[in-house]
Image (tube, rainbow, N blue to C red):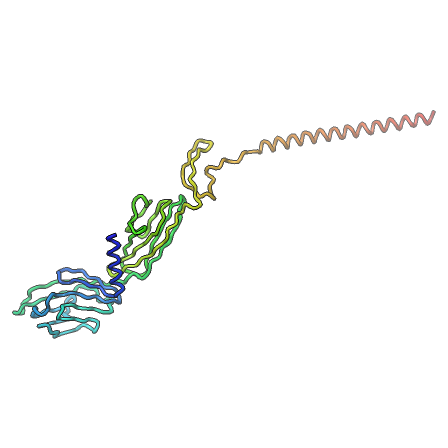
Length: 290
């Protein structure tokens, strides 16, 4: 939940369009949102510093003496407030990125301190998209993509908590895609963030178990099958159809045999009928001659 809290705080900063950065330590790294505003805290009490200069690379862009700006080579986007020691840069662009150096002088005009600040401008995350895919064994792969945003980082929560190893088949909650086990369900959220922005997308996670059945059987040749399969396409445990070809062959043979018998009987009967008719004719002729 701490990670979620940090992300919510970042979201508030992006809503205001302004990021804050403490540049009072040497080597500070600051980030600003492209098109937004960054406020750099350069010194604590500027009134006690006789003189200081603000440089980018080697070019001096700002000189302040006794809290009075005596040289300002930056445009109107840069607003320096000596009383608070803050420098505000509005409408940030890519060219504002770079190494800045603050040089502090004492009352004798000698360098008393020098510190650098690395300012990096990043495009904020503008949108998040989720896509889901059911795998062959009922598992679900969820992919998360970000619109815009430099160096996006990903994290996941399920019903307000981080994903556990018991719920994950592959991937981790810091990657842009995860594969969840069969019966994992709930409200899944993909968080996408970088140093200047945060966005998220929520999906009500339905399991891929609908339409899947667990089969556990032994095939006739001894192979055992125990797995989740799609019920509509399940043919793994369905016994193979019985081969009736031999029966059909036998029936055809019998039909052929009896056909031959019937034909033989028919012709035998026909032959006998002609013989009887011939004898009857001869008898009639002999009776007529007498």
